[in-house]
Length: 342
Image (tube, rainbow, N blue to C red; front, side, top):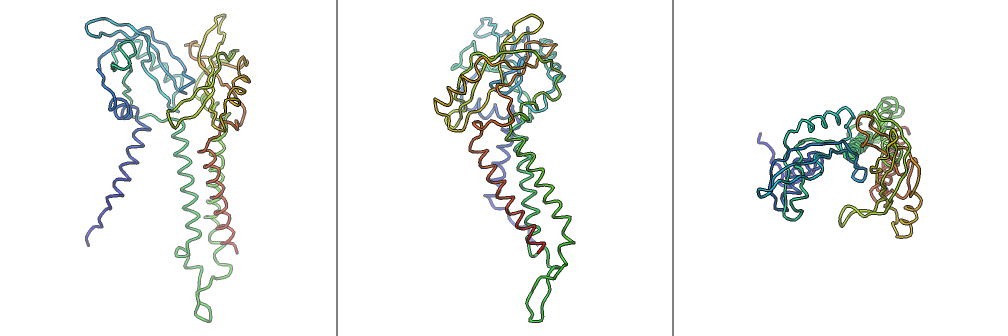
């Protein structure tokens, strides 16, 4: 028996998804494809010194900023710049301290110098082959749960899978047996509604604001300190298909010293008119919040512009589509489940 041929469109579709996943989960591959492919650059070594751990709230990333020493056209250059950054969901404070210790040893790193940015604005070259952003993990879990619920629904509703529930009547027509399938299928129905409950919890976790905020504090030994939001402004990010967000600087006090940082930016996607953006910015300017400070690296602090459970203005088209898809799946699951009990 010969092997069935794989359609070229299937191969192209699979390769496209592999490429998308590589760009999302591999900083090294993403940098090679998205940055180096569209710009001219010169790669060289730079020696880091005087490094410090920072939280880049506007980008929702952890970072290490250093003074980089390198040479351009025979001239020595020293610039304070980002030497490493990561938006991984698994960044613990212990891991960040180990990364900082590695940079403190002065091991040279790769940087790119481009004509467009100039010699004084180097870009470090990411070396990580795998990194798990929180938003990507949320999307994978949601897709997996949606697929599981749909699979169980199709299993319950598919007549071919339940041929034992049917028999021929006196007229020779195929009819359903009475009181036969309901008891046998209760494990599948229990699994269906268990998966539905998990999907509901994950969707709530994804759409809500406060759970996402406090997930940042997991695995981090941070100390609470008083802080004030300053220099708040609305900023458009993401290019042509981007969105507006509210950004604020952070002033906080640690052991008698006044330090500065960045608060976690908040998306503003729901009808972002100038008046609504200005009103939202005015509401948070000067607000007193709590900063969560790393005692070993006081320059590292996490603070939230808004810690409400829900932020209606942060919901965008993707969130609305998610809720609609969840409602559609719920209606189908209910119809399938109750139809099997009749």
